[in-house]
Image (cartoon, rainbow, N blue to C red; front, side, top):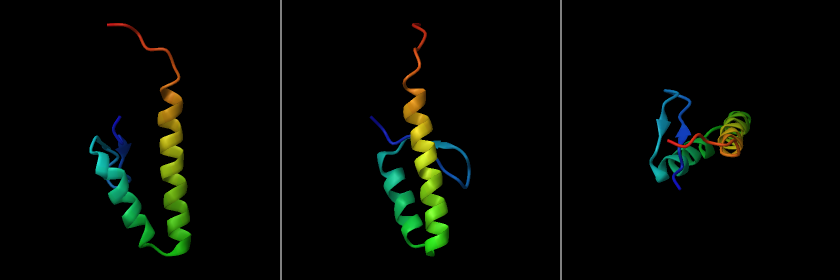
Length: 60
């Protein structure tokens, strides 16, 4: 499993497992209010990704 998370700066998906860790480290250096908003965004993105995995996939 990879940490495939969109980056807020580019909106592009990143398949690197360390991308999420790097993103969280950047967030932790922000002021509290900004950190809370950024962590909420990460939470929403991860939840959406997990929930999208629940839908049936077409077989190729």
